[in-house]
Figure 1 (cartoon, rainbow, N blue to C red):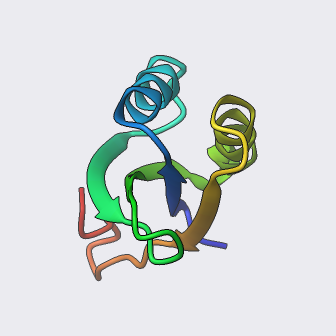
Figure 2: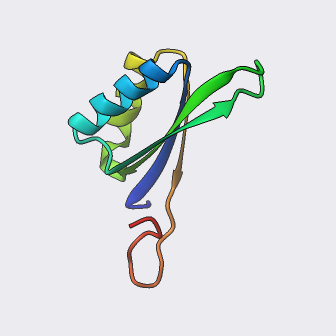
Figure 3: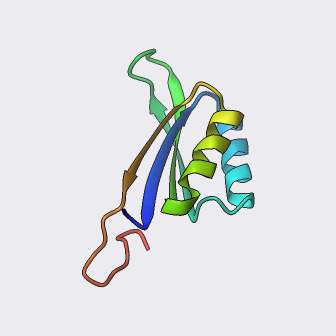
Length: 91
């Protein structure tokens, strides 16, 4: 099991995405949060993608927070690979 996990959530509305990011950061559920405007391939509209870095132990709580706050949004996760020095590339 990976120690660090990248979680991505796609949220409609910039204000909604910003509020979600603030809540996640304030709760200490992610060490890094990036928000980017992207085009939704299904709808051809603009949505906001949050890319979050968290620990394996925080993933269930983080995903629950995302789903409760931004219901119906897409959430994916993947482990972050480590370099030989034992730290992930983003650190």
